[in-house]
Length: 78
Image (cartoon, rainbow, N blue to C red; front, side, top):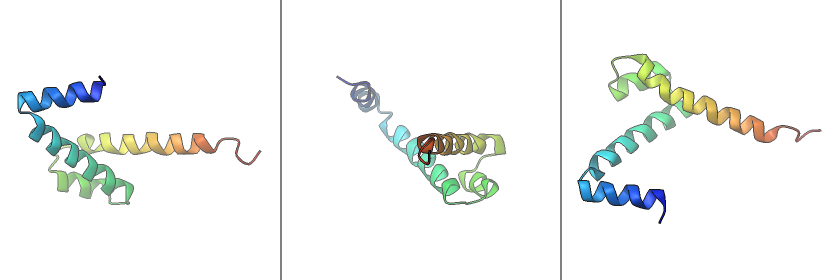
């Protein structure tokens, strides 16, 4: 049994699945908007965040993904 299956089972039993799906959809929407070049201030307003620092969490995720992509290319032209 995987961790994901245990988590999903818990969410189903506890009735928290709907809240989890909403959270995941919002997270995905914010990340996609930022990755498509939408200004962080605009994404922050769309998400209803009162502080830009809340939205910056998604930007940090993108920064990490970009770093991982560059690291994969390391040495490719050697």
